[in-house]
Image 1: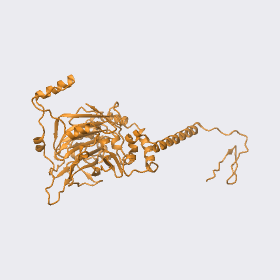
Image 2: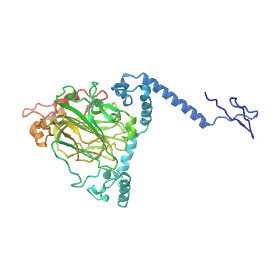
Image 3: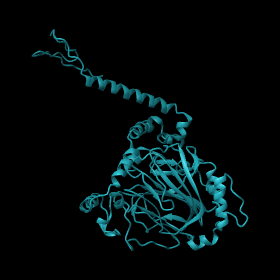
Image 4: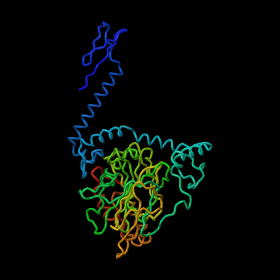
Length: 454
Protein backbone atom coordinates (compact mmCIF):
# COMPACT_ATOMS: atom_id res chain seq x y z
CA UNK A 1 0.00 0.00 0.00
CA UNK A 2 1.19 3.43 -0.89
CA UNK A 3 0.05 6.36 1.14
CA UNK A 4 -0.92 9.27 -1.03
CA UNK A 5 -0.10 12.69 0.31
CA UNK A 6 -2.09 15.52 -1.21
CA UNK A 7 -1.10 19.12 -1.17
CA UNK A 8 -3.68 21.78 -0.61
CA UNK A 9 -2.75 25.33 -1.37
CA UNK A 10 -4.35 28.30 0.29
CA UNK A 11 -3.86 31.90 -0.63
CA UNK A 12 -0.13 32.47 -0.30
CA UNK A 13 0.44 29.65 2.20
CA UNK A 14 1.30 25.98 1.87
CA UNK A 15 0.82 23.70 4.82
CA UNK A 16 3.04 20.68 5.16
CA UNK A 17 2.17 17.63 7.24
CA UNK A 18 3.99 14.61 8.52
CA UNK A 19 4.20 11.52 6.30
CA UNK A 20 1.11 9.35 6.57
CA UNK A 21 -1.19 12.20 7.61
CA UNK A 22 -3.59 14.10 5.41
CA UNK A 23 -2.89 17.77 4.92
CA UNK A 24 -5.72 20.09 5.75
CA UNK A 25 -6.00 23.74 4.92
CA UNK A 26 -7.01 26.31 7.54
CA UNK A 27 -8.09 28.68 4.80
CA UNK A 28 -11.73 29.59 4.69
CA UNK A 29 -11.67 29.95 0.89
CA UNK A 30 -13.97 27.51 -0.93
CA UNK A 31 -12.27 24.49 -2.62
CA UNK A 32 -11.94 24.83 -6.41
CA UNK A 33 -14.46 22.84 -8.41
CA UNK A 34 -13.35 20.03 -10.73
CA UNK A 35 -12.86 21.27 -14.24
CA UNK A 36 -14.97 19.99 -17.12
CA UNK A 37 -11.91 18.25 -18.58
CA UNK A 38 -11.35 16.28 -15.38
CA UNK A 39 -15.00 15.29 -15.36
CA UNK A 40 -14.78 14.03 -18.93
CA UNK A 41 -11.61 12.13 -18.08
CA UNK A 42 -13.25 10.41 -15.12
CA UNK A 43 -16.31 9.47 -17.14
CA UNK A 44 -14.10 8.21 -19.97
CA UNK A 45 -12.00 6.16 -17.56
CA UNK A 46 -15.11 4.63 -16.06
CA UNK A 47 -16.31 3.79 -19.58
CA UNK A 48 -13.03 2.08 -20.43
CA UNK A 49 -13.21 0.02 -17.24
CA UNK A 50 -16.81 -0.91 -18.02
CA UNK A 51 -15.92 -2.02 -21.56
CA UNK A 52 -12.93 -3.99 -20.25
CA UNK A 53 -15.14 -5.69 -17.70
CA UNK A 54 -17.72 -6.55 -20.34
CA UNK A 55 -15.01 -7.94 -22.62
CA UNK A 56 -13.58 -10.01 -19.78
CA UNK A 57 -17.01 -11.47 -19.10
CA UNK A 58 -17.56 -12.11 -22.81
CA UNK A 59 -14.23 -13.89 -23.17
CA UNK A 60 -14.99 -16.19 -20.26
CA UNK A 61 -18.58 -16.76 -21.44
CA UNK A 62 -18.38 -16.80 -25.26
CA UNK A 63 -21.45 -17.57 -27.32
CA UNK A 64 -21.41 -20.21 -30.02
CA UNK A 65 -21.50 -17.61 -32.79
CA UNK A 66 -18.57 -15.71 -31.33
CA UNK A 67 -16.48 -18.84 -31.15
CA UNK A 68 -17.31 -19.60 -34.78
CA UNK A 69 -17.08 -16.24 -36.46
CA UNK A 70 -15.10 -13.73 -34.40
CA UNK A 71 -11.52 -13.61 -35.75
CA UNK A 72 -10.20 -12.25 -32.47
CA UNK A 73 -11.35 -15.37 -30.60
CA UNK A 74 -10.19 -17.86 -33.20
CA UNK A 75 -7.63 -19.33 -30.77
CA UNK A 76 -10.52 -20.70 -28.71
CA UNK A 77 -11.13 -23.42 -31.31
CA UNK A 78 -7.63 -24.25 -32.50
CA UNK A 79 -5.24 -26.79 -31.00
CA UNK A 80 -2.64 -25.36 -28.67
CA UNK A 81 -4.88 -22.46 -27.73
CA UNK A 82 -3.76 -20.06 -25.04
CA UNK A 83 -5.95 -19.30 -22.07
CA UNK A 84 -8.29 -16.31 -22.43
CA UNK A 85 -6.67 -14.49 -19.52
CA UNK A 86 -3.22 -15.08 -20.94
CA UNK A 87 -3.40 -13.40 -24.33
CA UNK A 88 -6.87 -13.38 -25.82
CA UNK A 89 -8.04 -10.58 -23.54
CA UNK A 90 -5.38 -8.21 -24.83
CA UNK A 91 -5.95 -9.37 -28.40
CA UNK A 92 -9.69 -8.78 -28.13
CA UNK A 93 -9.31 -5.24 -26.79
CA UNK A 94 -6.66 -4.38 -29.38
CA UNK A 95 -8.83 -5.86 -32.11
CA UNK A 96 -11.67 -3.63 -30.93
CA UNK A 97 -9.34 -0.66 -31.16
CA UNK A 98 -8.46 -1.53 -34.76
CA UNK A 99 -12.10 -2.17 -35.62
CA UNK A 100 -13.25 1.35 -34.78
CA UNK A 101 -10.91 2.83 -37.41
CA UNK A 102 -12.83 3.20 -40.72
CA UNK A 103 -10.28 1.42 -42.88
CA UNK A 104 -12.72 0.83 -45.73
CA UNK A 105 -13.64 4.50 -45.89
CA UNK A 106 -9.99 5.51 -45.70
CA UNK A 107 -9.18 3.10 -48.52
CA UNK A 108 -11.99 4.44 -50.70
CA UNK A 109 -10.75 7.98 -50.08
CA UNK A 110 -7.22 6.92 -50.98
CA UNK A 111 -8.58 5.28 -54.13
CA UNK A 112 -10.24 8.57 -55.05
CA UNK A 113 -6.92 10.39 -54.57
CA UNK A 114 -5.14 7.75 -56.65
CA UNK A 115 -7.47 8.38 -59.58
CA UNK A 116 -6.89 12.15 -59.67
CA UNK A 117 -4.99 12.97 -62.84
CA UNK A 118 -1.74 14.77 -62.09
CA UNK A 119 -0.53 17.65 -64.27
CA UNK A 120 2.39 16.74 -66.49
CA UNK A 121 4.86 18.87 -64.54
CA UNK A 122 3.97 17.19 -61.21
CA UNK A 123 4.18 13.56 -62.28
CA UNK A 124 7.92 13.03 -62.26
CA UNK A 125 8.64 14.70 -58.88
CA UNK A 126 5.69 12.94 -57.20
CA UNK A 127 6.62 9.50 -58.54
CA UNK A 128 10.31 9.99 -57.73
CA UNK A 129 9.43 10.99 -54.17
CA UNK A 130 7.41 7.78 -53.84
CA UNK A 131 10.29 5.83 -55.35
CA UNK A 132 12.73 7.31 -52.84
CA UNK A 133 10.41 6.44 -49.94
CA UNK A 134 9.63 2.84 -50.98
CA UNK A 135 12.60 1.82 -53.15
CA UNK A 136 10.77 1.26 -56.44
CA UNK A 137 12.72 -0.18 -59.37
CA UNK A 138 12.09 2.45 -62.04
CA UNK A 139 14.46 0.86 -64.56
CA UNK A 140 11.96 -2.04 -64.89
CA UNK A 141 9.02 0.17 -65.93
CA UNK A 142 7.50 -0.30 -69.35
CA UNK A 143 6.73 3.41 -69.88
CA UNK A 144 8.38 6.71 -68.86
CA UNK A 145 7.18 8.37 -65.65
CA UNK A 146 5.21 11.07 -67.43
CA UNK A 147 3.05 8.44 -69.16
CA UNK A 148 1.33 7.48 -65.88
CA UNK A 149 -1.60 9.84 -65.44
CA UNK A 150 -2.18 9.22 -61.74
CA UNK A 151 -0.83 7.40 -58.71
CA UNK A 152 -3.06 4.39 -59.38
CA UNK A 153 -1.48 3.79 -62.78
CA UNK A 154 1.99 4.24 -61.32
CA UNK A 155 1.35 1.75 -58.48
CA UNK A 156 0.13 -0.94 -60.89
CA UNK A 157 2.71 -0.18 -63.59
CA UNK A 158 3.59 -3.05 -65.94
CA UNK A 159 7.09 -4.39 -66.44
CA UNK A 160 9.01 -3.85 -69.62
CA UNK A 161 9.74 -6.81 -71.85
CA UNK A 162 12.49 -9.03 -70.47
CA UNK A 163 12.48 -7.53 -66.97
CA UNK A 164 11.73 -10.97 -65.50
CA UNK A 165 12.91 -14.42 -66.50
CA UNK A 166 10.26 -17.07 -65.81
CA UNK A 167 11.61 -20.46 -64.79
CA UNK A 168 9.64 -22.94 -66.91
CA UNK A 169 11.21 -26.11 -65.55
CA UNK A 170 8.28 -28.58 -65.18
CA UNK A 171 9.63 -29.58 -61.76
CA UNK A 172 9.55 -25.97 -60.47
CA UNK A 173 6.81 -23.66 -59.21
CA UNK A 174 7.44 -20.00 -60.06
CA UNK A 175 6.67 -17.07 -57.79
CA UNK A 176 3.47 -15.24 -58.79
CA UNK A 177 4.63 -11.84 -57.48
CA UNK A 178 7.48 -9.69 -56.26
CA UNK A 179 7.45 -9.80 -52.48
CA UNK A 180 8.73 -11.32 -49.29
CA UNK A 181 7.83 -14.85 -48.24
CA UNK A 182 5.91 -14.67 -44.96
CA UNK A 183 4.99 -18.30 -44.25
CA UNK A 184 5.24 -21.70 -45.93
CA UNK A 185 4.12 -25.15 -44.92
CA UNK A 186 1.68 -28.03 -45.06
CA UNK A 187 -1.95 -27.39 -44.16
CA UNK A 188 -2.65 -28.78 -40.69
CA UNK A 189 -5.82 -30.87 -40.63
CA UNK A 190 -5.07 -32.94 -37.53
CA UNK A 191 -7.78 -31.28 -35.44
CA UNK A 192 -10.49 -31.94 -38.01
CA UNK A 193 -10.53 -28.26 -38.98
CA UNK A 194 -7.84 -27.49 -41.59
CA UNK A 195 -5.90 -24.40 -40.54
CA UNK A 196 -3.38 -22.15 -42.29
CA UNK A 197 -0.55 -20.22 -40.68
CA UNK A 198 -0.67 -16.43 -40.89
CA UNK A 199 2.58 -15.96 -39.00
CA UNK A 200 4.41 -18.27 -36.63
CA UNK A 201 1.97 -19.10 -33.84
CA UNK A 202 -1.10 -17.43 -35.40
CA UNK A 203 -3.41 -19.58 -37.49
CA UNK A 204 -6.79 -19.27 -39.18
CA UNK A 205 -9.39 -21.65 -40.56
CA UNK A 206 -9.26 -22.66 -44.19
CA UNK A 207 -13.03 -22.86 -44.57
CA UNK A 208 -13.35 -19.26 -43.37
CA UNK A 209 -10.59 -18.11 -45.70
CA UNK A 210 -11.58 -19.94 -48.92
CA UNK A 211 -15.27 -20.43 -48.14
CA UNK A 212 -15.06 -24.24 -48.01
CA UNK A 213 -12.75 -27.15 -47.32
CA UNK A 214 -11.24 -28.73 -50.47
CA UNK A 215 -12.28 -32.27 -51.31
CA UNK A 216 -8.74 -33.33 -50.39
CA UNK A 217 -9.74 -33.62 -46.71
CA UNK A 218 -12.91 -35.64 -47.30
CA UNK A 219 -11.27 -38.02 -49.78
CA UNK A 220 -7.51 -37.81 -49.19
CA UNK A 221 -5.26 -39.09 -51.95
CA UNK A 222 -2.34 -41.27 -50.82
CA UNK A 223 1.03 -39.68 -51.43
CA UNK A 224 -0.32 -36.12 -51.60
CA UNK A 225 -0.53 -33.14 -49.26
CA UNK A 226 -2.12 -29.72 -49.21
CA UNK A 227 0.48 -26.93 -49.12
CA UNK A 228 0.18 -23.20 -48.51
CA UNK A 229 2.33 -20.09 -48.61
CA UNK A 230 1.86 -16.36 -47.93
CA UNK A 231 3.76 -13.68 -49.88
CA UNK A 232 3.67 -10.05 -48.74
CA UNK A 233 3.98 -7.23 -51.29
CA UNK A 234 5.53 -3.97 -50.07
CA UNK A 235 4.34 -0.59 -51.43
CA UNK A 236 7.41 -0.34 -53.67
CA UNK A 237 7.05 -3.79 -55.23
CA UNK A 238 5.64 -4.70 -58.63
CA UNK A 239 1.90 -5.09 -57.95
CA UNK A 240 0.67 -7.46 -60.64
CA UNK A 241 -0.05 -11.13 -59.97
CA UNK A 242 0.87 -13.91 -62.41
CA UNK A 243 0.17 -17.61 -62.58
CA UNK A 244 2.86 -19.76 -60.89
CA UNK A 245 2.00 -22.81 -63.04
CA UNK A 246 -0.31 -24.01 -65.81
CA UNK A 247 -3.79 -24.63 -64.38
CA UNK A 248 -7.50 -24.28 -64.98
CA UNK A 249 -9.47 -21.52 -63.19
CA UNK A 250 -13.06 -22.63 -62.60
CA UNK A 251 -14.49 -20.36 -59.93
CA UNK A 252 -14.07 -16.91 -58.42
CA UNK A 253 -15.08 -16.11 -54.84
CA UNK A 254 -15.23 -12.54 -53.59
CA UNK A 255 -15.31 -12.08 -49.81
CA UNK A 256 -16.26 -8.51 -48.84
CA UNK A 257 -14.65 -7.61 -45.54
CA UNK A 258 -12.57 -5.14 -43.63
CA UNK A 259 -9.29 -3.66 -44.82
CA UNK A 260 -6.97 -3.97 -41.84
CA UNK A 261 -3.32 -3.19 -42.57
CA UNK A 262 -1.20 -6.28 -43.22
CA UNK A 263 1.99 -4.94 -41.65
CA UNK A 264 3.82 -6.89 -38.96
CA UNK A 265 2.05 -5.10 -36.11
CA UNK A 266 -1.45 -5.82 -37.42
CA UNK A 267 -0.68 -9.41 -38.43
CA UNK A 268 0.58 -10.10 -34.90
CA UNK A 269 -2.37 -8.28 -33.39
CA UNK A 270 -5.29 -9.88 -35.25
CA UNK A 271 -4.89 -13.70 -35.20
CA UNK A 272 -7.28 -14.27 -38.12
CA UNK A 273 -6.65 -11.09 -40.08
CA UNK A 274 -6.72 -12.76 -43.50
CA UNK A 275 -10.25 -14.05 -42.92
CA UNK A 276 -11.40 -10.60 -41.80
CA UNK A 277 -9.98 -8.68 -44.75
CA UNK A 278 -11.59 -8.35 -48.16
CA UNK A 279 -10.19 -10.82 -50.67
CA UNK A 280 -10.76 -12.46 -54.04
CA UNK A 281 -9.98 -16.16 -54.46
CA UNK A 282 -9.52 -18.00 -57.75
CA UNK A 283 -10.13 -21.74 -57.41
CA UNK A 284 -9.47 -24.48 -59.92
CA UNK A 285 -7.65 -27.67 -60.77
CA UNK A 286 -4.33 -28.78 -62.10
CA UNK A 287 -2.64 -32.10 -62.74
CA UNK A 288 -2.25 -32.95 -59.06
CA UNK A 289 -5.64 -31.73 -57.80
CA UNK A 290 -6.91 -28.60 -56.07
CA UNK A 291 -5.30 -25.20 -56.67
CA UNK A 292 -6.19 -21.72 -55.42
CA UNK A 293 -4.70 -18.24 -55.61
CA UNK A 294 -6.09 -15.52 -53.32
CA UNK A 295 -5.40 -11.78 -53.39
CA UNK A 296 -5.97 -10.30 -49.91
CA UNK A 297 -6.76 -6.60 -49.64
CA UNK A 298 -5.42 -4.22 -47.00
CA UNK A 299 -5.64 -0.58 -45.96
CA UNK A 300 -5.49 1.58 -49.11
CA UNK A 301 -5.46 -1.64 -51.17
CA UNK A 302 -9.17 -2.37 -51.38
CA UNK A 303 -9.13 -2.33 -55.18
CA UNK A 304 -8.39 -5.84 -56.46
CA UNK A 305 -8.58 -6.35 -60.21
CA UNK A 306 -9.12 -9.77 -61.80
CA UNK A 307 -8.11 -10.16 -65.44
CA UNK A 308 -10.84 -12.74 -66.10
CA UNK A 309 -13.45 -10.23 -64.88
CA UNK A 310 -12.48 -6.64 -65.67
CA UNK A 311 -15.87 -5.42 -64.40
CA UNK A 312 -15.43 -6.86 -60.89
CA UNK A 313 -15.48 -4.02 -58.33
CA UNK A 314 -14.25 -4.45 -54.74
CA UNK A 315 -14.42 -2.31 -51.59
CA UNK A 316 -17.94 -1.02 -52.19
CA UNK A 317 -19.64 0.85 -49.36
CA UNK A 318 -22.74 -1.36 -49.56
CA UNK A 319 -20.91 -4.67 -49.19
CA UNK A 320 -21.25 -6.83 -46.10
CA UNK A 321 -18.47 -7.33 -43.59
CA UNK A 322 -17.06 -10.57 -42.26
CA UNK A 323 -19.82 -13.12 -41.81
CA UNK A 324 -21.79 -11.77 -44.76
CA UNK A 325 -22.18 -13.01 -48.30
CA UNK A 326 -19.58 -14.83 -50.37
CA UNK A 327 -20.04 -13.55 -53.92
CA UNK A 328 -19.33 -16.59 -56.06
CA UNK A 329 -19.13 -17.01 -59.82
CA UNK A 330 -18.58 -20.36 -61.51
CA UNK A 331 -17.24 -19.84 -65.00
CA UNK A 332 -19.28 -21.41 -67.79
CA UNK A 333 -16.14 -22.08 -69.79
CA UNK A 334 -12.86 -23.41 -68.50
CA UNK A 335 -10.15 -20.74 -68.28
CA UNK A 336 -6.78 -22.31 -68.97
CA UNK A 337 -4.00 -20.15 -67.52
CA UNK A 338 -0.37 -20.65 -68.49
CA UNK A 339 2.63 -20.13 -66.26
CA UNK A 340 3.52 -16.43 -66.20
CA UNK A 341 0.13 -15.19 -67.43
CA UNK A 342 -1.20 -12.16 -65.56
CA UNK A 343 -4.28 -13.08 -63.51
CA UNK A 344 -4.81 -10.13 -61.14
CA UNK A 345 -3.44 -6.88 -59.75
CA UNK A 346 -3.93 -4.52 -56.86
CA UNK A 347 -2.75 -1.04 -56.03
CA UNK A 348 -0.05 -0.15 -53.51
CA UNK A 349 0.70 -3.54 -51.91
CA UNK A 350 -0.86 -6.39 -50.01
CA UNK A 351 -0.71 -10.19 -49.74
CA UNK A 352 -1.06 -13.25 -51.98
CA UNK A 353 -1.93 -16.66 -50.51
CA UNK A 354 -1.51 -19.94 -52.42
CA UNK A 355 -3.20 -23.17 -51.29
CA UNK A 356 -2.62 -26.20 -53.50
CA UNK A 357 -2.55 -29.97 -53.59
CA UNK A 358 0.73 -31.63 -54.59
CA UNK A 359 2.65 -34.88 -54.14
CA UNK A 360 4.55 -35.23 -50.90
CA UNK A 361 7.89 -34.85 -52.71
CA UNK A 362 7.24 -31.13 -53.13
CA UNK A 363 9.27 -28.69 -51.04
CA UNK A 364 9.60 -24.92 -50.87
CA UNK A 365 12.96 -23.49 -51.93
CA UNK A 366 12.35 -20.02 -50.40
CA UNK A 367 12.27 -19.60 -46.64
CA UNK A 368 10.14 -17.15 -44.61
CA UNK A 369 11.67 -13.68 -44.59
CA UNK A 370 13.44 -14.08 -47.92
CA UNK A 371 12.78 -11.74 -50.83
CA UNK A 372 11.51 -13.26 -54.08
CA UNK A 373 10.66 -11.90 -57.52
CA UNK A 374 8.00 -12.86 -60.02
CA UNK A 375 9.18 -15.76 -62.19
CA UNK A 376 11.83 -17.05 -59.79
CA UNK A 377 11.48 -20.64 -58.48
CA UNK A 378 9.86 -20.84 -55.04
CA UNK A 379 9.29 -24.60 -54.84
CA UNK A 380 10.14 -27.83 -56.60
CA UNK A 381 9.58 -31.56 -56.67
CA UNK A 382 12.37 -33.67 -55.18
CA UNK A 383 11.45 -37.31 -55.64
CA UNK A 384 13.79 -40.05 -54.31
CA UNK A 385 16.39 -41.32 -56.75
CA UNK A 386 14.53 -44.58 -57.22
CA UNK A 387 11.34 -42.86 -58.31
CA UNK A 388 10.37 -40.75 -61.28
CA UNK A 389 10.12 -37.09 -60.18
CA UNK A 390 6.77 -35.35 -60.32
CA UNK A 391 6.17 -32.58 -62.83
CA UNK A 392 3.70 -29.77 -63.29
CA UNK A 393 1.27 -30.16 -66.22
CA UNK A 394 1.66 -28.10 -69.36
CA UNK A 395 -1.12 -26.09 -70.96
CA UNK A 396 -1.15 -28.62 -73.80
CA UNK A 397 -1.92 -31.40 -71.30
CA UNK A 398 -4.75 -29.40 -69.74
CA UNK A 399 -6.30 -28.67 -73.14
CA UNK A 400 -6.00 -32.31 -74.17
CA UNK A 401 -7.90 -33.55 -71.11
CA UNK A 402 -10.35 -30.65 -70.81
CA UNK A 403 -14.05 -31.42 -71.46
CA UNK A 404 -15.49 -29.91 -74.64
CA UNK A 405 -17.03 -26.46 -74.36
CA UNK A 406 -20.56 -25.58 -75.43
CA UNK A 407 -21.42 -25.24 -79.09
CA UNK A 408 -23.31 -22.26 -80.48
CA UNK A 409 -26.62 -24.05 -79.78
CA UNK A 410 -25.47 -24.84 -76.27
CA UNK A 411 -24.65 -21.20 -75.51
CA UNK A 412 -28.02 -19.99 -76.84
CA UNK A 413 -29.80 -22.68 -74.83
CA UNK A 414 -27.94 -21.71 -71.67
CA UNK A 415 -28.80 -18.01 -72.09
CA UNK A 416 -32.48 -18.79 -72.73
CA UNK A 417 -32.49 -20.99 -69.65
CA UNK A 418 -31.24 -18.09 -67.54
CA UNK A 419 -33.94 -15.80 -68.96
CA UNK A 420 -36.87 -18.20 -68.46
CA UNK A 421 -35.69 -19.70 -65.18
CA UNK A 422 -34.73 -23.20 -66.30
CA UNK A 423 -31.98 -24.47 -68.55
CA UNK A 424 -32.97 -26.13 -71.81
CA UNK A 425 -31.65 -29.60 -72.40
CA UNK A 426 -28.65 -29.66 -74.67
CA UNK A 427 -28.90 -32.48 -77.15
CA UNK A 428 -25.79 -31.92 -79.22
CA UNK A 429 -23.13 -32.12 -76.53
CA UNK A 430 -22.61 -32.09 -72.78
CA UNK A 431 -22.10 -28.69 -71.14
CA UNK A 432 -18.82 -28.02 -69.45
CA UNK A 433 -19.20 -28.06 -65.66
CA UNK A 434 -16.76 -27.40 -62.82
CA UNK A 435 -14.76 -30.19 -61.30
CA UNK A 436 -16.81 -32.39 -58.99
CA UNK A 437 -14.65 -31.58 -55.98
CA UNK A 438 -15.25 -27.85 -56.41
CA UNK A 439 -18.97 -28.34 -56.98
CA UNK A 440 -19.16 -30.41 -53.81
CA UNK A 441 -17.25 -27.85 -51.78
CA UNK A 442 -19.59 -25.07 -52.89
CA UNK A 443 -22.57 -26.93 -51.45
CA UNK A 444 -21.24 -26.26 -47.96
CA UNK A 445 -19.39 -22.99 -47.79
CA UNK A 446 -17.58 -22.12 -44.60
CA UNK A 447 -19.55 -21.39 -41.42
CA UNK A 448 -19.28 -17.63 -41.78
CA UNK A 449 -20.67 -17.31 -45.28
CA UNK A 450 -23.74 -17.80 -47.41
CA UNK A 451 -23.44 -18.22 -51.16
CA UNK A 452 -24.66 -15.66 -53.63
CA UNK A 453 -24.10 -16.57 -57.26
CA UNK A 454 -23.44 -13.75 -59.68
